[in-house]
Length: 127
Image (cartoon, rainbow, N blue to C red; front, side):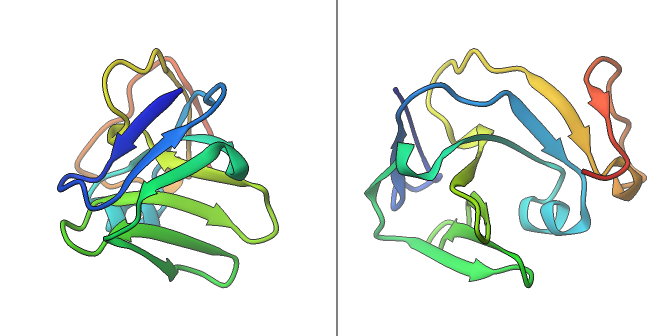
C-alpha cells in the first residue's frame, strides 16, 4: 500500500496493489496543469481510496477526460479518461520512497523548449 496527499493535506489517499511505472506526459494540458511535464503512476480506480476529500475538485479538461486538484493549495492530483477503469496519480504526491522508475515520455513533440528529456526511457511523439 502507498499513501499520498496534496501539499496542504486537504486531499489524502491510499493506493492498494502494484503501481504502474511512472509515465511523463509533455502535452500542453499536462504542462499547464502542473507547470512542467506531468509524471504519473496508475492504478485500477477501485484501488484508489480517498481518505480526505475536503479540498478535492474535479474538472473536465477535455471532451474525454477529467482532472482532479486540491482547491486549497492547487496541487494537481489525478487524471481519468472517460470509460476507463484506471486513475493516473501524480507520482510526486506519493509519500516516501516509491520504488518507481519512469518507463516512457509521451507527447514529446509538444514539450516545452526550455528543457531536454533525458536519455533512457522510451520517447513517443504521441501516446
